[in-house]
Amino acid sequence: MTPRDNKKKVGHTAQPGVFKECTMCGKKWSTKDEFLGDKEIRLNGYQWNRNKLRSGEELAGLLIFTHAKAECYTTLGVEARSFKVPSRARQ
Ligand SMILES: [Zn+2]
Image (cartoon, rainbow, N blue to C red; front, side, top):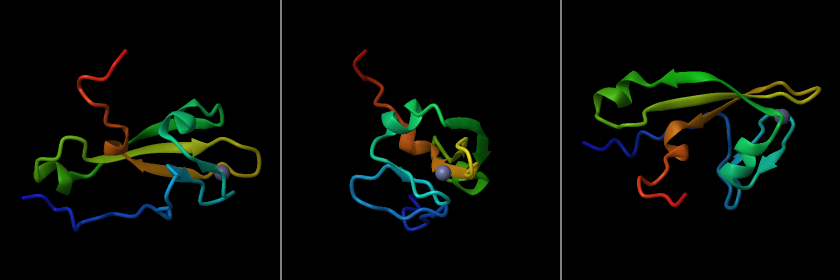
């Protein structure tokens, strides 16, 4: 019961070495840390995916960010599981 084929694209193109690309201004973040550390990135909220929740996936949903940059201010959705941290992550 793993709907792997149910891949949802949220207006971004998957590129090697690119964690996220702004669909509006084209800015790229190569890693998760770079993305989260960007002062122009603001967390906006969380959007559940009920279908995935039912199928038993833990982190089913999207984190909604705003690229708070002049002349951009677009909304970026990142799959929550992209932020999943191994439970035994170093400190
Ligand atoms: Zn942008």
